Image (cartoon, rainbow, N blue to C red; front, side, top):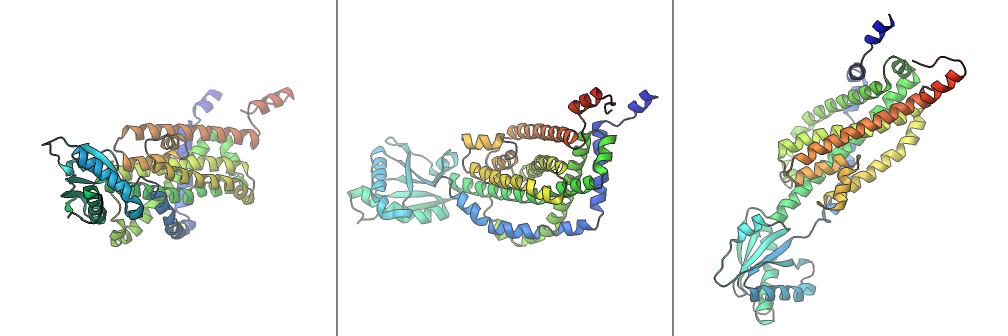
Length: 411
């Protein structure tokens, strides 16, 4: 008889699906779900105010560089003249670097140099000191034509009095403009991911505290594994959040299309828009599960809503600091800081989404998702064990204590 009963017990996965289906239906068809859909109105205001933070962070990226491709003597004279005129030009003085010194009779395609460059090259000056040619994006060469004329005049005879005419050759894009656009795309994705995660993860807390007050959580914990309860609630809240995001996306999609001018600064991410959107959804799910698992542990230990607010405040503030850290790391790709942001579990979704905008490799994202899934399992396991020992008063230590007193150990 006992063997039949134990064989009919649900597995952790099956029990988690039962809990998830129950919570998902109860929340989705409740009256409060309508008010939940009104939530984005307030984060939108916060997002607009936080735009200034994004602009400040964007300035951390490297300044665009003016490359010099000339004969050795002309190239050295241009660099020296640029350094001499820097105090006079001030903010308009370009950062200059010799890309290549041409040998006699050698020619080069300046547009191809811009395309193949691995640095932050925005434009290239070619030709001679007497007849310089500036190649780059239309806006960049228009801004630098005056300083280049002054620099070429100083390089010609040591005085900026005789200014040669600078020939302009516009290209569609440059490495600097493309990287700047990808940086804006990365930071926009990070900001949206952060706002959605912080706004939606709090639902896990309120749901668990309510069921704990009604003694429902104790009934569930006695019937199924505590890990299944945690997983079920996490995935139910994630499902409700995705439904809300779908509704908001449909509602605000028209407004975004009408304001398409505001999106003109967003460059296509390195992985492409379809993959970037898919990765955004995946990293939102991982960020939600990571933060939600911590909130579940907090909610299971708290007895009242006031305790929840007190305990969860440090977590929320630390998440804000993690977001700023990930945003800062996005401006410094391929460094130890960016690697640390990708490895720290809570900052990993934000850092990896920014990487998707700047790097087209796909394998790192597969590894990152596996890494984040592992940490979700660790946090859920730790939280469920803590709940059993501190709240349900069950576990190895309590079992040994009851056995020593002659009481039956819990099943």
